[in-house]
Image 1 (cartoon, helix red, strand yellow):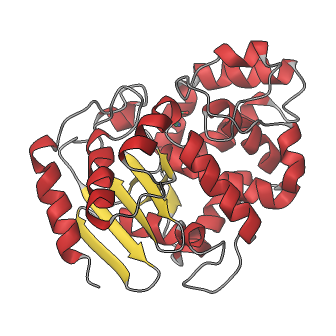
Image 2 (tube, protein in one colour):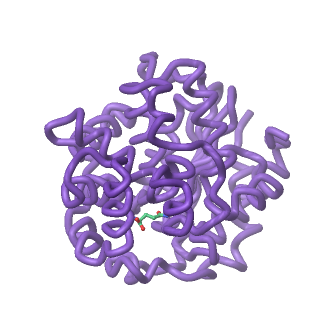
Length: 304
Ligand code: GLN
């Protein structure tokens, strides 16, 4: 099967909408990105890589990094991780603080900012250089040492990370942060500022489609059991308060980032990544979600 035509059809379907949505203006370097860009990559376990548009252009993966950081922390702590995090959809924006007070500083899930900060804290406790650990993890998965952190972007975010800092302090007051707030927020901003292309994201996430084994290097990244659970979390929590709508329209485990990228997993079959910087009101790529919706319409790959 050759998916070149599938990608072409998706690209022509979304063409009239390219440039729609708002770029993430609260992180200054992201505010400058031209929204009229679109790239998509598909990696199937049987047929390999297919690409279209700006699929080789690196972008800021932002919250897509939450999947990889969580996989690392889940490997380290196993099910003990659930003493510090919940696994329910939040139904609130990714950077919301409202649930934290009534839920005693325990974030709803690892894929909203509060949860990702707890994950970053776990990594800070385990690694001397936590940002480097996430970077190396991704470099191994992508098999490319040129993958890097956009340090300028990370710094710009850190300077304006008032909400993330507030959340971290708040969780610390409940005893759910073991390290210093600055150190944790710093690690978190660095992991968000890793730049990858769509073609690299589908490679990095391929283990999620392959029961935890990286199909390129044949190494076990997460156990079969953990992989199923990461996919379940992506399906229920990966696109924040739009997770229900994304399940309805796309029907795949997915993780978005405010850089405009979305990673989607077709368990047992493939990974897809779309990048289009304009976001909808939930902070998910507007055109990216449309493209994924078209993908599952054409292929019938929805898990539902
Ligand atoms: N670094 C961003 C933040 O903390 C990530 C948010 C996102 O991609 N949804 O706000």
